[in-house]
Length: 463
Image: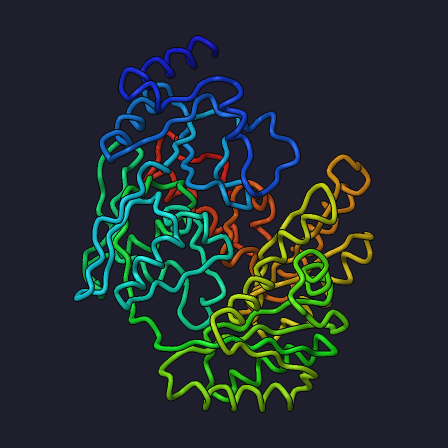
């Protein structure tokens, strides 16, 4: 095994710059973890880490991996939270941080062509300079990459109104498991010419092919935006407000949720004048033409009050806007300060079952004596339970595993799914059959085998 690994590394160094091939234990150990905060990483140390700079180098790595039957795991910024971008039982970490070019932003076509290592937040700023808009906005957009967002079908707060990453990918250049280059779409907004391969690769977690370039749809940047933060004395009132807003045919950019624990934890570590005695809060963003803003705000405020909102904070400038959003996006970081480790999850149900999901998760965590901070994009039924734990406490870790299993059972019983935007990776693969039929999983396996007969592309993930 060691001889095979040494030959693998030698071939990689001969094919690429030696500076782009990392093989010391210290260097490899740094890539055995991602943001999923894995408890035990001894099986996740890669054989080698390779930085690629262009498509041809990716093809070379794929050919070498096939020669030695060694897995390839693609990695951007490592912000994944389900263990999708770490190895299991060795392999090659393919790092895309050097493939970070924005080739083109076409204002006339409203499209952009980029490499996978482009940081999402940087890309959004460049697009907005031209009066355009790329809506997908996961909370880690300041560091996460476009390649990672494609691999996981990322969403974010704005997905309620604007959709997720899959709605903006119109073409991909993919290096297949055999080393060929595949174009999945076209530089057109509509495409009904054959199967939609874009949607097959978006969310496939690097198990079907390696994305080396993406063409993305853009839309006009809204003229104005504003955010409201409404507080409620019960979760039931907050959920009723979500449904009432939608029933009135008002479509905010965002309807996000924070429970009492999340509010209190954020305020404790990142003070933002949040009302910590309240049971729940909604963060509601509106956007559009300036002339429409007051109309939208008046209707939403009236609905919120009718549903029991006891206090409403509103932004009147960029500073206040950023303050509210920073508070909402600080939940995970604040929760991480409570104990040595923190986990987050991503479960989603039909909105009619949202209250039952939130209250059910709280009840499960109370049963196992675990703290939980809940946030989520409740406009589309998504909830992120964030659970701080101490991995060194064996009893607490066991209780946490029991709680996770019951949360997934609860989600399945509420007609939900186990991921709306984080993916499955290694952490949820043993639970996927709770919400996906065996027939569907068998078809997924057949698709995987068709694209990757040697099983070298991110094996052991999803199923």
